Image 1 (cartoon, rainbow, N blue to C red):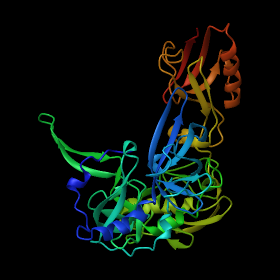
Image 2 (tube, one colour; image 1 turned 60 degrees about the vertical axis):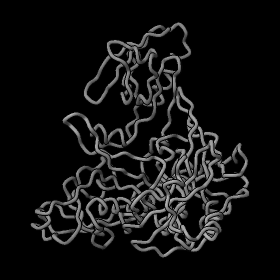
Image 3 (cartoon, rainbow, N blue to C red; image 1 turned 60 degrees about the horizontal axis):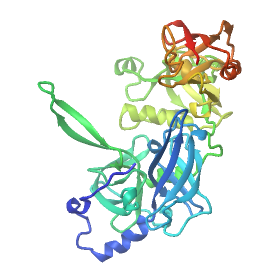
Image 4 (tube, rainbow, N blue to C red; image 1 turned 90 degrees about the horizontal axis):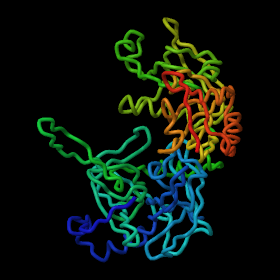
Length: 462
């Protein structure tokens, strides 16, 4: 994602306006830390080219990209033809491989084949900055593809820094392209831009005017601090589809209300109420119940951050850093009982959408995928291990979308096909494969289940 900045220098007021050539000496080598990343997304019926910014993170050709720039739900087989480009380099780009995404932050890792190319430089070849609120920092901005991704700079004031729950710095205005590096006035590495900028505007709609937020998808006004980036580089996935993390099976924890906390003598502590638990999960097996209050983790009070949202997010991140098979402990209050310590052996995290199997049936006009724990949570059954075929995609103007009395829809569950019970994803694929290739088949009758009812759907075939 890029935006042409035709009048950039007319309005930018560089923090080194009097430095002239001296700043250019600082800027030129540091601008080589930012590269353009191009790739193709191939879905059932579409193929599109996308691009974003990445930061060079190693002499071996490693590049990191913000989580929002490559949708995390896309499967590996949908991500194709990665290339990295840099201003003044090969206009065809340098082939690269997708290594996967960090399980905590979603940061994407890409590696240029054959290592770094001329004109590229890792961010960690520069010293670290020691930043404070009120400091003026600058970041790299890449122009559009039509301008060969020429690097420029922007600058902003650091207005806040802290743990939210990752260590971040916030700026008064956009400071860099998303996923580009940020530096201090001496050229020391200050952080990695990885957010969106919000601009306030007043929307006029007759007598219903109101404030809205307009997002610039190409610029960032927040950065990850260097220590966060260092930690990211220690979690390069071994499996491009995603490494497993430790999983306990807790769902939708809620911050304990202040009046209840006061009643329990927890006024100055953080605590969470367990809203739901996945059946047959480690949490259930080791004695945690719905409605329990978690007051401690691994022998310590819950770490309290600047606000409730940051505190809860930090707890989830802390849990996700564990590996399958590791033991963790929770201090839990059940009803009016005294706090007790429960030790839980973590299981492997359930399969994600990216890891799920799927198959597209072009003649029928829809695809199916495996049922996931996330589907169970959405349907409030809170089970794991269900083996069901789920409709993933329905092609517009296809037999499936024109079915009667109602179209087949995304997220429908396939229960029967032509009066034959479907007991698994594999069974559904086997039956649909045969119907797809059977040119004599003129109709398919599907018993499907959506979020509220079971329905019979007749799909007419050509």
